[in-house]
Image (cartoon, rainbow, N blue to C red; front, side, top):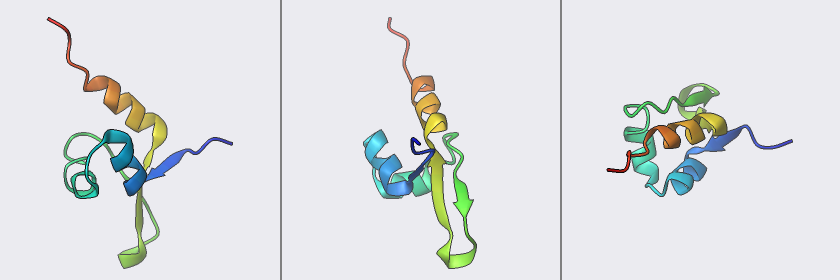
Length: 63
C-alpha cells in the first residue's frame, strides 16, 4: 500500500524547502497539515496527493 501521508521532513525534501518553511509557511500557502496526536507529542503530516496537487498549482504559465 503506497504511503498516504508525508512527515514534515519528507514534505520539506519533496518541495526542496527547509523544515522551518514547512512549519511556518506551508499552511499560509494553502498546504493544509493533518495533526496526529495531541499536545506536544502531536505530529504534523501532509497528504501526498494534496502536496502534489499544490505543486501543480504553483506552476507559472510560460510567456
